[in-house]
Amino acid sequence: MPDRLPSMPSSLRRRAGRLAALLAFAAAGIAPVQAEPLVWLKQNLPPATITEGPNEGQGYIDQLVDYTLGKLPRHKASIEKVPLVRELEMMKQGGAYCTRDFLATPEREAFLRFSAPVGRILPVVLIVRTADRVRYDRLRDADGLISLDTLGKQAGLVFGVTAKRTYGARADAVLKRVAAESAGRIAPVYGQNVTSTLFRMLQAERVDAFLAYPTEAMYISRDESAYYTYPIAESRDLVTLSFSCTRDARTDAVFADLDALARTPELQKTFQAAYERWLPPYLVPVYRSRLAAK
Image (cartoon, rainbow, N blue to C red; front, top):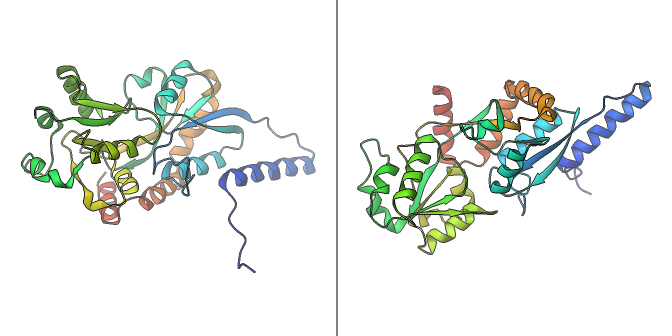
């Protein structure tokens, strides 16, 4: 006989919690507050969000969202999985939508509102084939960084990127300029499992390099010796993450609750623990040191 019962999936735990609350209200003769409907959008972007396979629901954003929705019982949330491009279009059209998938940009702030920070992550890196290191090592500056601007001037080099993803204002500006100056230099990838697709394109030499976060490289590639990562000059700082909701009256109440929750130490600790689980071990002390310096 097993020592303990198997753990209950997070979605079932939330439903059980809501049912228990309703029963408690009924027993006390109190009418519960009507839950406000909400659609929480997320894409498959491991290991932030994992929507399939043995690690489904165990991503660091998955864990954050489970914690968050469990703290917002008056909002009846359903979760919808959509590709990034579709997610952006849905948010633009308006509705009772919230997510944790987007970084703030001036363009997005026209139709989204962003909460206080929920946490910070290490910035994107350049990923190349290990066999090509000699080509890139000579381009590093005194701090060991590679400038995308310098790379953009290397004839014939092709970058792989996730379509519609922002990599930060400076990096985005360089990528946009390179794309405008030379057709075919930027290879955008659409759909689900984008990072896996970019890795396959790198291995097949369809791209020379691509941008991704350190956790993504660790999660996707099972052979760390096959690739090498470089920090980039245009993305030095930790990346700030926030919740975002549409600028729609139907999200006024939930956004206020999300913003308040984002400011609590408990949520910050929950996020950090979930994120560190997916970091390469050698980067955990680096991450903590940079957090402490903020």
